[in-house]
Amino acid sequence: VTRADDDAGPLADALRALGAEVLVTPLIRIVPRPAPAIDVAAYDWVAFTSRHAVSHLLASLGERAAALRTPIGVAHDPRVAAVGLATAAALAAARVPVDLVPSRRNAEALAEAMVAAGVGRGHRVLFPCAAGARDALPSILRDAGATVDEAVLYETVADADGAARLRAALAAGEVDAVTLASPSAVEALVETAGAALAG
Image (cartoon, rainbow, N blue to C red; front, side, top):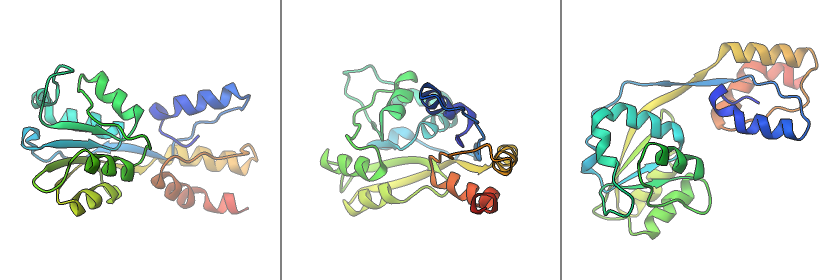
């Protein structure tokens, strides 16, 4: 399992329940970037495509995060959209009500659901994201006429220790399957263990 330690648990547990021996070797780790000044109250919507975006935005807002914490059932701005159940759970844990979760769990589905909910011309959307995030959500919303501001709050970097452990396990013939959960993990795998996999 090549996910970061704090993300690996559910997948590792599910694999163990199936009888697999699991080796957790994170290939990437997430680090914060200097946060831009954000006036969250100036937006009609905030669109989250990962739970990491939730934690990094709330950390960067500090006390100003109160603008997102509205009792459930009370009308509020900005409205909040989450890409899936894990992201929605992270928001709920932070006492941020979620207005929209699409039935399919990807950025395209989230953007399409937001457009179906009326997001378009005259709306401002905040998109907290990682460096190098896919532009699917901003593109769809901009095509619908919305203004989308991307707030780059964190980035993924290679985890040298995890890569070294994986290379050693591959060289020793101890790995039958490698799980990958993001494009950045695929890139890290090819960069750090491509030769071992090819062999």
